[in-house]
Length: 555
Image 1: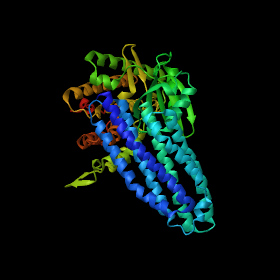
Image 2 (image 1 turned 45 degrees about the vertical axis):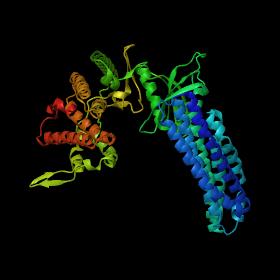
Image 3 (image 1 turned 120 degrees about the vertical axis):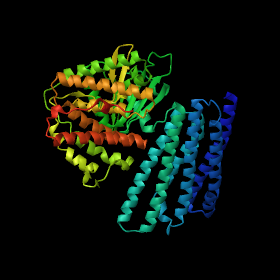
Image 4 (image 1 turned 90 degrees about the horizontal axis):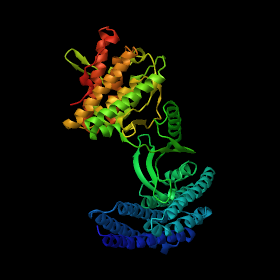
């Protein structure tokens, strides 16, 4: 897309945005006037201006979508347009809150109730912050974006104080109707502050090219400040990686100033404090065991209910990507490196202490989440002639005692979330790395084995070439684990593996959107559980339990 055309389009959008911001500022100023004196003229002005604000928002949206519909729009422009639209919708919300406040004032029996709680400090925060929005947004000014975010924090403090005073007055029984109305009015002012926060975070997106909450940005800033990494938060490139299912945010950043010596990539991870501390302790434990296996910790910062880590960015490819994209030689090398590392860890950490993995108990804990996504998979009790078909819950009841029977004769240090995308292979250096280690502990190694196998099985890949690669890896890994079991006299390997696979298959169903594939996974788990019950009913030795290789593959 020609640069001149892009600039012209942005300029046209800015012109409309300028008038929108101006109208919303007038809404706030008129709302302040109404709250001071309940001026009927100002009330009418607020109501009349609302339609114009809505129209301006529609015009900005249409122009934005037209710009994005053109060919080859640069990412930086896309980020700005995203930020413009977020800011536009939040400006409209602020205008709506002003209309709502004017409406609520009409319900008051006495204006004294509202004036008792000073609204002026709210407007002293909201109006200047709103006045800074246009320039901060279109110049992608990070510092002014952060200043707009900070205004929201001060509005929150003001609202908390007013809320406490109104609650105290309500307890005395004085004019409850007017007090409740006043609470609604100040709540709208607090929500206007929330909209400013959204606008400030949109400006951060436009400035840095990554959607970050202000709390995440501040956490990154603070973590960098106390780390050994010489990176300036204002001179970083950002690349969002993922947001984990536990709510942790993971972002890759690196310095973009070539004149500085430190331009390395690092991983910034923020999440709930307990989870982050668990990961930090696990990384330290693994580093002592096998230096270089986990990422190095460059910085840690605890900021209350959240904490953050700054970690080494590990070079290499995930095991999963090598399976799909690597040559046969690359796949063989990756598998050899990974299994050699795993075997070494199991050997060095093996303790002859029995370990009960409690796979059925684990399955039960996750089952409600599974059934929320796929309620159709759990079969009900049925009867065909004289033959009873147990419900899935009944099946679990029957198999649950095996949790106390099928116990590993030893435990090892396991990864705890051994999906194939948590294994990094650096073929150039001949190194293996593990990431996402916060669940690691001394446990039954079949927890990791079953998770690894199902992480391949559950991949929604149905073309022959890709599925053949997944099946090949699963069979090889199963044979590797079986050989380890034989070498260490783990005679209950097969029945425990069946139980572990059933657990992982069922709990993974919640990540599948394909109903047919989800059903196939669930039925595979039922098959494994039925096989275990059949073996138990026969009174056979558990050491003689066996599974066909086909149970680890899907066609």
